[in-house]
Length: 185
Image 1 (cartoon, rainbow, N blue to C red):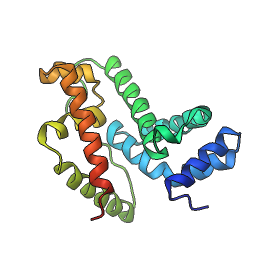
Image 2 (image 1 turned 30 degrees about the vertical axis):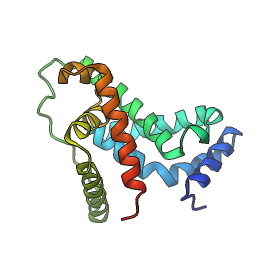
Image 3 (image 1 turned 180 degrees about the vertical axis):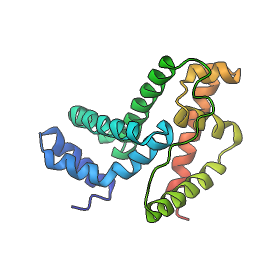
């Protein structure tokens, strides 16, 4: 089953809600490269990302009955789950480390094949180009929120901005990204 469209992914969620384990397998096959890439970028550790990836799909299985296509499509739903799980892991990691440990830590090697490295490089380039179209203040808060795991409150404090301003910038940036990505190249 090649579930490429959002409608096909939504059908998989509906099947999962009725207990269809095969639908979960198909959803994983179709969306795990995207989710795993996000988790690797956020967590910077392949084994931690693998564990988090399993957590995402366990959570998707659990919450499939509550999924509503009217509230959003499947991929962003999974991305938000992944982001929440990654942020929880980052916070636990921060709580366990002394303040000065891990500050200059280098990104873990992914041991990916040359083909995978090329695909990932092209994907990073495409995302980078789209992000460059955002105004600098929106790009900064979006990157800090989604890839560094800062909460809105932490961002407001770090950047010396009102909380409402931070929330507005993130929301505006996400809407703009959606519009840019929906526009044919």
